[in-house]
Every structure is written in C-alpha cells, then in structure tokens.
Image 1: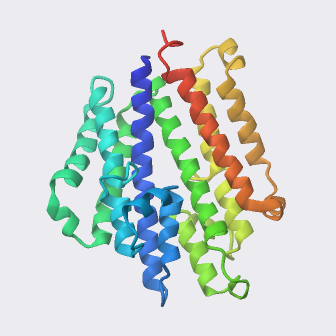
Image 2: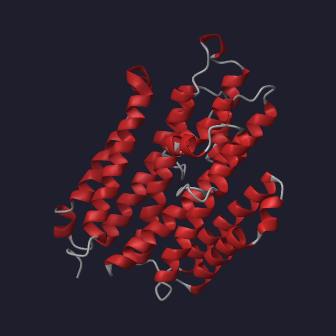
Image 3: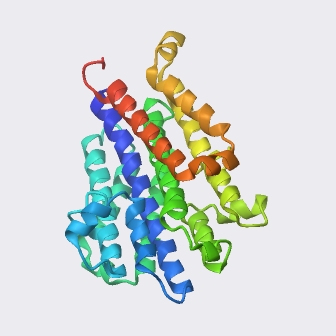
Length: 315
C-alpha cells in the first residue's frame, strides 16, 4: 500500500473519532451546566483542556464564557481541532484517496462537511440538536466503514487511527476530571463530585456499562474501568489490544513482526496498562501516570508515522 494512502486512512479515522469525541464532551458539559446550580467557568475550560488547546483558546478569546468555549470547540476557524476543521480535514484526506475507500464512505463524510461549512441555518439550531446531528453522522460514517471496507491493510490503518485517537481522548478526559477538576476536600464524595464522575463516564458512553459492573461511583473504580477494562471498547486496554491486532495483520510474516519497533512498543505498553494496579497508580499519582501514558501514545504515533507513512521505507 502507498504511504500516502495509509496516511490518509489513518487520519480520516482519527479526525472523525476526534470530532465525535468533541461532540461527546460538549454534550455532557452542557448537561452538567444545567444540572448544577452555579456552573463554574472551570468546568467549561476543562473541555478546552481535554483537547490540550488552552493556550490557543486564550489567544483567540479572553472572555472564557460558555459561549466562547462552545464556539471554539465547534466551529472556530482558527482552531485546527474544532469539529468543523476536523471534518474538513477528514474530507480532504478522503477526497485524495477516493479510488481506495468505498464511495459510500466518501459521500457520508462529504455530506457532513457540506452541512457544517455551507448550511448557516444549521448553526442556528439549539446546541443539543447540532451535537446530536453531528454525532449521528459520525456514527453513520463508522457504520458504513464497518459494512463496506475490505478487511485488508486499509481497514487496519483505519482501525489503528481510530483506536489511538480514542485511547488518547479517554485518558485526557480522566486526567481532566482527576487533576483539573479536583473538588475541595469537603466536597470529595459529595453530590458535585459524583456528578462530575458520572459526566466523565457519560462523555465516553461508559455510564450504563459501568453500572452493570459497579453499584457505586468511586474514583478508583471509574479509573479502572476506563483504563484497564478489557471488554469496554473505549478503555485504554481495549484500544491498545486493537492496535496490536492491526499491526500484526499488517506485518504478515514472523521476521517483520520480530523486527517491528512499533509492535514491540505497543506490546510493552499494553502489558503495562493491562496489569496496572489502580490503587497503587492513584497513590503514586494518577495525573503523572496518565501524563506518561499520553507521552507513550505520542511515541506510538511517531513510530507509526516513521514505519508506514514516510516514503523511504515504502515499496
């Protein structure tokens, strides 16, 4: 497979996943603001922090109002990670490889792009209707991919991009809640603290599945579920396992697998996060642990880029 094709497939998946995650964050943030008597700006800024875009946000807007945060995340033209720009980037990548991906996939991405770019009345709808429509269309794109893409290397690069983005966003949201939204000591375990943990679970569509396993909401149980639950499709453990499967499928012979720095790094990372003791991790510093995880995920991205997307090693 050509490097440019693999690169585009990888980034299409990442951008669609990123856009959907941003929708999730905003929708839950909006719901929390309605459920709390006094919605603090820190709760809204935590959504910007979850995207690692605080510095850019403060450069573009000093008001830090909820409306500013919503605009920054949904359709700020100068924010490369806004929803509208993520979809535009996915559409451009899809356009470049239209001969490779199923036509239905490109059509769904293109329709969403046109809706966000060329339908001003869409942005006049209530926020929840905007978010519901964007999320629905992102899910349709993923469903069409699932139903139409050949399970070859193209599928593996698509899954690789999706799972890396998903693992990163799950870790970021957990870090935001645990580190940036730490409650006052007297509020620990209180209604607001529990509401924020529930909001975190809902932001990754984990609340219902979590409740099937756990009756109480606790930091250690929520952290464990999002980091090391092997059956939940948005946990870091699950995403890493899917990435390993993708690379093993791409590297078809034993010698290439044995010499793959990327595959070795993934297996080490998966082993680390599948055997982590959450109690010990929290005691030693959950924020520091997640910060290390995100650095490791960046390393995985860099290794993926060097191995598959740089022209020189490709045939």
